[in-house]
Image (cartoon, rainbow, N blue to C red; front, side):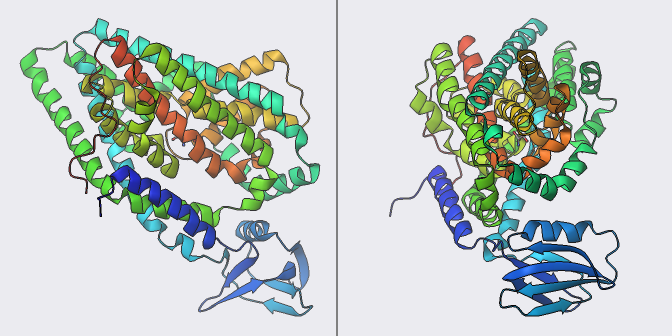
Length: 501
Ligand code: ASP
């Protein structure tokens, strides 16, 4: 039997994971009650009530699984709380001394720990890799003028793609108008179900004052930035260190650059080894996500999700190919072929940072980008360039405004272009932060922040989707800049990693 290549295995893992997760999906009409030494399953309830001292605190009905769990979780004083269920056959049961109320886990989520280890390994690499490769990258750009030239081109390209992405999002959401199609009952239900999650995000108090934002890019203590994984601060520190290593005598800078070069290379070799478990990890991650995903919520938010996915699709398959064609000679097919692994990892981990080590390897080995450009452009892009997130934030902001009945003026829509660009820059390259930074966009146009409760339920799925163009744009920028510098090497879209099966 011919040996399968790694990317084929990853795609198979992804598809099988989705099927496995769908087969063993978590039953939305089952609730597990855990007691001190035992547990019980409740299903087919007609009414599910929480009681305290025999007075009813709240009653829920069939299909309310999520609200039932959340209500219990948020109950301040759980002492003496009883649960009374009326089953569909008319019988009633009362449960006392319940410790936790949970979803009944299915085999679909049992193996997620393998995926979690994989994501943690990639994240473990991301911070040292960004630091080391940017120091080496900046130091190898011969002089300050060169750094400024490459840096300027990179940021200019990122700004261009972000503004186009947001515009695509705004056009889609204004044409489809998903917020106007939403049923008012569904709106109330979503606001009710997710209000606590929304509040938790709002309480994190994100703000985007431009001056404050710029000040915060400068780390007071780079080691703290590294420890906390603050990518913008790490990037700032690393670029400056790289630049000024060029300004000191060579005999002093060479060992430092050699050290960080070694760290960076070791990280890349490590990622090649980690990728060996990628097919299995991807399988478990996708299986767990599909098994846990409430498909009914996807139905409720169908038009909104469709608008985001359509926008991301246009971004990925129209904007990026056009830019690739304008700025490079790379064939579209080769570009996408080379990225297969990157796309699968981005989709299943929802993290640009976790995907960065794979992106770097692929850009250098398959797309012919020299190390000095890849190691500068990619870490920078992972941190500041998030077209998918910017597009999603624009669509989400207008969607929420539509649901709440706000008619946005042109000036407000232009404000979204600006704030979504900044919010995307401020979004950390890890899962779910795009939603948090959306609060900044909502504030800028005066739409209630609580509105994020409407879209939290589908955020995980849309996060997976938006992370794909986020990382793809970084690779695109990499080849565009290498090509503009006349430094693009041979394209080998099928080059395999050494050491892989
Ligand atoms: N998960 C995204 C990324 O890592 C960020 C976000 O939009 O939440 O690129």
